[in-house]
Length: 381
Image (tube, rainbow, N blue to C red):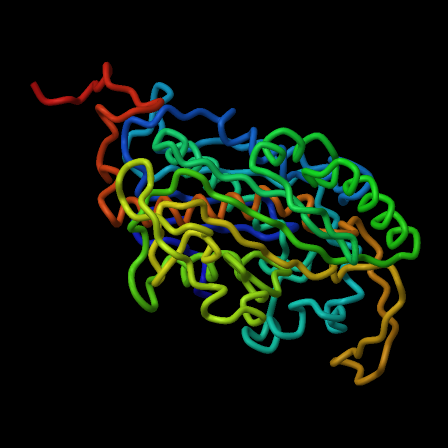
């Protein structure tokens, strides 16, 4: 099975299954000298972990990370960073009815059809539980970006038919983590919470979307065509479980604009270099970053594991059967999806910055940020 690695210079390789013993990730390509400890990783994992509120799964996972390699005396060594997050609350027995009767809109049948077998406990490898690895790796990437002056923030801007008004960057920073929906508009967050509760009471679920923004990304990230920044971001976002759409800039609304309306005029910025006036392109032109804020949206469909009765077939008995997924599942995905989207943004951007020579791939000495410059036990004389 391929498809378990992301990135070119900053490479992330993951393993683990929803109800297996543990989840794990190896990060290769992190330069030496970055100050890093488990708390840096845990902070982001706590934002993603289950059981945070009544609108998340009640699965009791502490998601405690353990760094196994690549860090010594609190600093990265330049060698692969191995991390493990043990599964503490797996309950595979609830999935036995679906061993040969695929749950509606899951990967049960497609995995079995492709491989001739699958880990059926909780969806195995196809479970969104696997994103715990992405967030762990993304925490390292975000720390590198922060030292380079690059900031990433996302918030839930729509749940069902309830859409938040546009918010500022400052509002996202201030309000996103203040409520369980992770919507930066407090009044709308309350409406979203009530709507989620309605579907939850009916044994159903609901979809939504996440708005993201990047500040401080340098111009020049990306390359033409297949290696464009937008293409790589699309790959990253469409890999997030339940994603059905990825947009940047005007996104799908661009189809309503004429060329003269959408085209960004150019003006001179404070640094004397050209800059687009409106940034309707979302910080990307010709597949390459302009230096302006990168922004867009990720749409996630409603969770497919719901207690409402549905129909399926048992391919072993040849009979039609009733499917009712009894377990611990989220009624909505965007609230816990926010740190996942931020992580994938960070991983993509760090990879491009390494490729473009914006970051020394070997060591971080002498650069601004939390990089160690006074201790190198094996530094040549």
